[in-house]
Image (tube, rainbow, N blue to C red; front, side, top):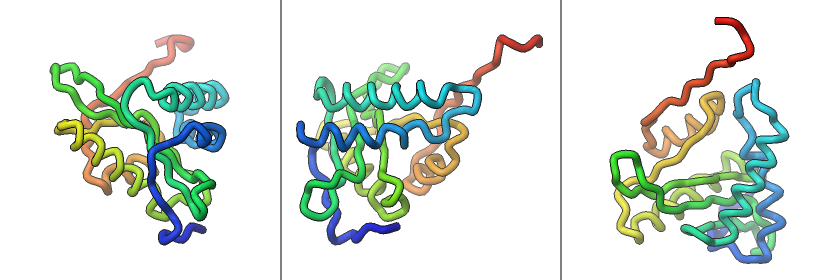
Amino acid sequence: MNVDQALIRIRPARDEDREAVLTLAPRLAEGVAAWRDHQAAIRAGQRWLTDSLAGRHGAVFVAVEGDDSRVIGVVSVSRQRHFTGATDAYVGELAVAEHAVRGGVGRRLMAAAEDWARQQGLSHLTLETGAANTTARRFYASLGYLEEGVRLTRSLAEPS
């Protein structure tokens, strides 16, 4: 960890943050299953972040370091309907610059997403992460998140 917590601030994303936020897209591809195309995962992360920054739904918060110009983390949060019919808050992306991992930035960004959800009158905040992303799964568990669903994949290229 190379960040000074006293110099970190969480704020809503601005138009001028776009380029810096998009540089965090490769962090969203970490933990993707080995049989998936890693470059395609990065491109998907860039699309997700671009869509979130377009501001069509929800909110995007950034963690900035120092003079407010160096973006070191991002979280997007929006409303999403659960299959039961309830509306939950949903974290689409959480990414923290590699040098800031384990420095409290992710926790602070998630707290901002949770605050947004409470302000919207929502009772649950949900998210998804890759099964192979054990670091992220441990992080979310440490914040009190419980695993609710499991996605299974079978290759059809191999005989059963």
